[in-house]
Image (cartoon, rainbow, N blue to C red):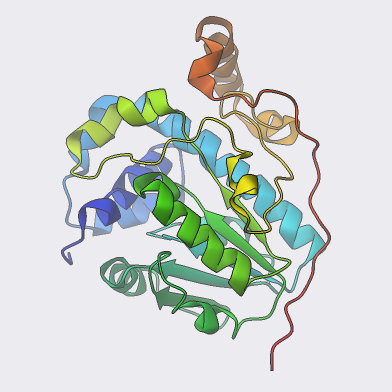
Length: 272
C-alpha cells in the first residue's frame, strides 16, 4: 500500500465503517488493502452509525441533484475511496474524484477511472484542479464530506472561495462540527495522527464570508431530513430517538432555527 499522509489515512475510517454497514464495494476494498483495520473494531458500532448518517445525507443531496440534472457532474473533494458512484450512478452523470496525489494514486489503483469517472490529483487549498473538472459537463455538485474539518479556518475560507469562483451557480455540500467535538475527538480518531481543527457552531457562518454563498439546507446529524430518516434501518432510527432524547442539544450542533428545504435550479457554467 502506498504511504499516505495523516489526513489522507482517515479515509480508512470511512471505508471500514461502510464495509461494516453492508457496502459490498467497501468490503472488497478492505479485504484488498494492506492496512490494520482492526484498530477500528472497538468503535465499529458508533462509528458506523455516524458514517451511515453522514453518507446518507450526502447521498440524498446527490440524488436530488441527479434527479434535476441527470447529465451534470458530481465532484467529490478529498474523495479517498468513496463508493458513492457505485451506489448512485444514473448511467449519464459524470463523476470526478479530487484528492491529494498519494490518495489519488491509491484510488486509481483500486478503483480505476472509467468513461464517466475520473480521478484528479489536487488540493482544496488550490484552484489548480478546477480546469480539469470543468472538462466534464455542468451543472456541478461539489461534495466536501469529512474534509474541511481538518483545515484551519482561513484555509476553509480559501477552499470555499476556490469553489465559489470556479463553479458559479454550482452547489456545495459540506459538514460542520461544533467546538465540543473538535476539542474532544472520539472513536477511531483517537488512534490517528490527524486532528480535527475547524469548529463551526452555526452552518450559516460561511454566508458572511463575502464569497457569494447562500445556505439552502441544513440539519443536525441526529435529526436528518425526513427522506433520509425513512430510509434508515429501524434500529438506527431507534438509536437516533435515544440520542435526541438524552444528549444535550448543544452536542448535536442543531441550527438555531429551522432552515427552509430546497435547492436552487441547475445553472450550467459556460466554457470556451
